[in-house]
Length: 314
Image: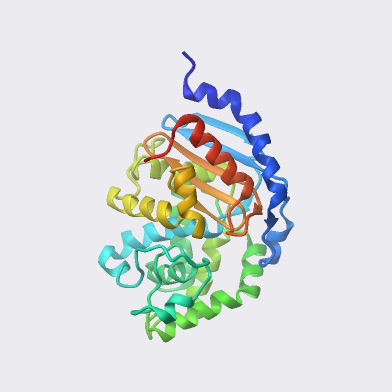
């Protein structure tokens, strides 16, 4: 009998090429100028299993920045630093139905805190909760955590993307000052310092294998199957996976949950981190985005795989 892993190895190249066609209907993110340089047709994937066997296909080794995928892991770090009560006094637990960079509900809904930690306003707030006395110290702790999760001590940020984000982030800057006005960011907090931390963790550069290794730790409830070390408390991983399912694909999260049924988080560089609980960590890159901000080809590929192997958690 052919195993699922053997079927994945055999069929992945053809499935990937079929999904690659979907890139034609998307567009590379251009509102961050440095991201506009990515290849629209690119598509790559890496899958790790619990024994850390690896399947790759397409442009799996291309480098890209985490962008919003980093929000899952800064949330986890903030939970480990501050605990649930402190974190969820500043951000909510609900999907918004709005665009990821919207400030609408900050003004319309009392008490004016971000609806969840995976939208931009929520992630900026979470960045303020990372322990450290300076932006450099906070960023250093984030990098150290991400390096441990990926098993790559050389992991670092892309300075060009960081500068590009900093120079064009007018809406994010507006969100942050609105959070300050709402006292979500306290009087002692410097808005520009919080934004520095936020832009830098979004600019950390990875490949599909990095994403898949980070996903694998979540798939195994916070324990790294490679080192057998517990890196994240299981309770916090439960929280992160729930947010990934309900909010991780922006305001396309509901349809992705129905079609794929996998906890996942996307970023506007075209990356998607997805998990099959207890089985696989998956990293995908496909820079062409749909109107919701998700990789057109990457979403198609993940939905294809989930349907073929009945991976939905439902």
